[in-house]
Each structure stands twice: as structure tokens, then as C-alpha cells.
Length: 378
Ligand code: SF4
Image 1 (cartoon, rainbow, N blue to C red):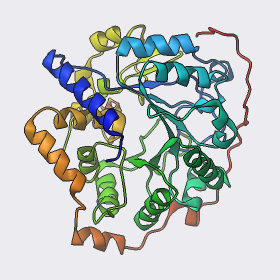
Image 2: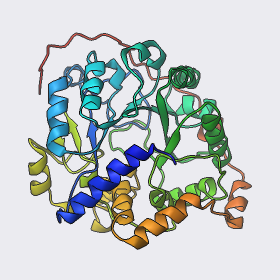
Image 3: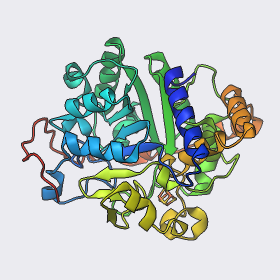
Image 4: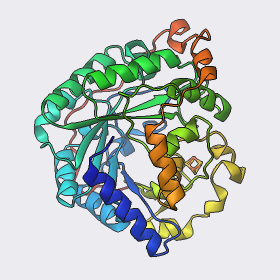
């Protein structure tokens, strides 16, 4: 089991309750972005290109709690920016845990070891560490030499401290599937509870536009990586979503399943696009033209998207939509996906991006304490 039984039970009963109530569009995970500033400046990121006066702002704990209570989701993911830079991140996490929300604190782990003492181990809290691959690949991806080693130290310290630790790996064009499989082995060996993997999204604002994957290339890459999988690998993702990125099934985007709240309000329609903001979660649901989004909508911004914030909710919905969905999910969890063609893909020569490009370090100031007036909003 990749998540504790209590978490799986909470999510299952929540989804079934929403379905019994007949709610057509309901959220599953609140993506809470308490700030945008970061101590990395990754080439594939679309979140940190805001002007300084925006990067200085942050949500207060009370604003975070209000948003999560408004959406009512059983799970909260806290990305950013780098949430460990928020001066009250411990209060935010403590308040969400007290509300019995399953919290995934998404971090690049550069400050994890240093800030671990701020948190208490709990079944409701998991550090979700962003690690894009083995050392060379990760350092290239986050434009920071040594980033991998610091993150791994943070993971080991958190595991030793009794915390739940998961990982989040985003893959771009040029990823070496054999190296990614080795990365999974490394993560399981250091005691990571479960791993998340997804193709990167083509952010218009990201500095590196050359290495985003199209849908066909994503499916090929994930077929190579996730077929013939090892029993030891545990994934922190709906296993039908993994089939989706492997090209074994199709889903339509349900972006409302993972709504995003930040200093601007509720983001339309999803974590990745910015087509306006709503003041309340209900306004987000009611005022967004959802037919305008998803790959099949013809919206060019959605053409290549396969990210979990759009499609994992669809997989969860399918799982709990029928006995067939439950059965297929159970089978997917046991399946190691033997596939001779995928083994052949692993033997194809690859030219990882970092093998022919210099590592460009984009300087981002590592700030641990930033003074911002409480309650500052845009
Ligand atoms: S397809 Fe992707 S980018 Fe488009 S709405 Fe869905 S999650 Fe957002």
C-alpha cells in the first residue's frame, strides 16, 4: 500500500460521499500556494517569474485555513515557490493537521534538514520532495550543482526523524529511462514511502522552452520507465493515472479536482494556466467555462498536458465510479506490466540533455527569513 490505510479510507469515503450527493464537479486536493518565491530558479518552472513585489507576498495561516475549509478537500498539497521559505509554514501545517487534512508539503528540500525541528511527525503530514532524477539529471533540471545531494540528505534526515517522505519527479525531453528507473531504486532504498512521476507542463513563462515533452513522446518515455516495473517501487499516485501516462488508457481533464489557491485567489482553471481568478471556490466552479479546457477541447494551452493536476483526479473519479473502476485499479496496483517492446525501448541510445548542455546555474537568493507584513494581499 503506497499510502496509509487511514488516508486511503478517508479519500474513498470522501469521493463516494460526493458521488452520492450527486456533485458533478468536486475537488479532491487543494493546491495551496502560500508564496511564489523560491530558493531555486529551475529552467522548466513557470512560477517564479513574478516581479519582486509579488514574490515578497505570502498567504497568512488564516487565509490558508479559510481556503481549505472552503474547498473541503481531504488532502492539501502545498507547493509554491518553496514553502519552507514561508516564515509561518509550521503554523500552516500545524493548523491543517489539526483539521485532519492529509498534507503534502512540496519542497526542493534544500532547507529540509535545517527546518525539520519545526514539524512533528504525523500520519497527516508528508514531505513531498521534488527530485527530478539521479544526481546529474536533477542538478541540471533545477540549475543548481549539489542540489541533489542536499535534497537526499534532507530526505534521510526526515526519514530518520520518523516523518513520512514521498517524492515528486517531473520529466522533460531527454530523460534517460534507465536512469529514472535507477532513481526509483535509489529513492526506495533511502526509505521514501512512495513516488510520484509526471511529465512537465509547457509553461509559457519557463526559461527553457525546448525540452518539454509532447503527448506521444511522454507516452513512449513512460512506457519505457513504468513497464517491467519492480515490486519494490511504490507510487504515490492513482495507478490508473500511471496507465494514462503510459498510453494505456485515456482520461479527460478534470482540472476542478485539484484547485489552486494563492495570494491572487482561486486560479482559473488550474495550477498551470492563469485565465483569471475567483474570490471563492464556488465562484471558481460556477464561473469557469470548463468546456474550454482539456486536450480534447482544442485549447492549444492544453494540447500536450498530461499532468496530475488535470488528470489524476479523473483517474480517482474513474476508480470510485463503478465496481469495474475499483477492480481495474486493484489489478493495476498488482501489475508489473511485463512488456518486451518496452524493454527494447530501454536499449535505445539516449542523449540526456545534461550530456551535451552545460549546467547553467540560475542564481536565486536563498532566503530563510523574509519580513513581510502580515495579511499583505495583492
Ligand atoms: S489540460 Fe492541463 S493545462 Fe489544460 S486545464 Fe487541464 S490541467 Fe490545466
